Length: 459
Image (cartoon, rainbow, N blue to C red):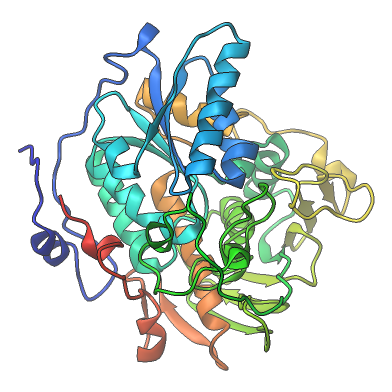
């Protein structure tokens, strides 16, 4: 049965359970036809959020593929929305196409457009879950920047609703579309280093900063909408994003909007660790952590840290800024280390000191023989945005699907929660609940400031 309107209270009642396991979600029949009104039957894409990651990565990542066309942009900062439109118009103009990209007033207006088949969501982290859920309910295919969600509860809702709706979802963990990351995981999955017992993940922390001072809200910024479900606060540019350029925004260092590097770069590296160990649909059974948090200034995400995560399989993940940035798989017959090397998505991504090979091993012969046809061959993608677009066209599964996105993000968020406790936390990955710890359980979700957030979706 096709539903065109969902009562908010009924939606919340039907999708709330004491555990975060299976959810009953409203059934809306998904559209199987894309771009019905589009020239040349291209996938018509809308860009939600026109900030740094969009400018550096997402806009061009979609537009360079001829099976799609970006036709609309949306941002709560009107200057950035206009810049987004100019970027799109210029891209197509340089190719001899005359376009007039539409600026949408807000993402809900975009989602209600019959012209839009799919959306790319490149918003701050606290604005990931709500537009993703709303896009799925509007039958729009979704490319979502990592991390998947701000809380495990949000992430479970996104996964269940996306899968029920049948739309194609890709998380922006583009390392899966890099050949050396895939090859590293195939080598590990095929036993080249024996039985893996430990994975060491190197992630940086963030430094502290000065005290933010209240400032007048820029006329071009809808600050209330930018805050969204987060608590009200005074505007300060250092906690939002720069007005003069597209350098690294301050919200990445403020816990109301982001958990820090543990979910920022963390979702990338945890994803590869889970892919290589075949733990991508699972979760740990125990987590403990230590972390330094700033004692002054307004930036309050974690700095130096160490996390220990144990799985039912007997494998252990160790995560710290003290390790080289990347993933080291350690087995009983050797090790494999994989990293981005010199590759960066934006100019503020950390780089290793000096030249660094993206793939190394305890014995170079481990890397030489390739993967046979009769061995485990993982899905192949060389272009993350195109992989998503092709999944829409062919009705296939994209390489970074929504349930893996949720499970891996949960590992990051569990690490963040464990940083707040002086003792080990026990976790049940089947029910997605903490064992015997009410305080930790409270951190599986967070309050939502009306009228924003997943608790206030009204269809």
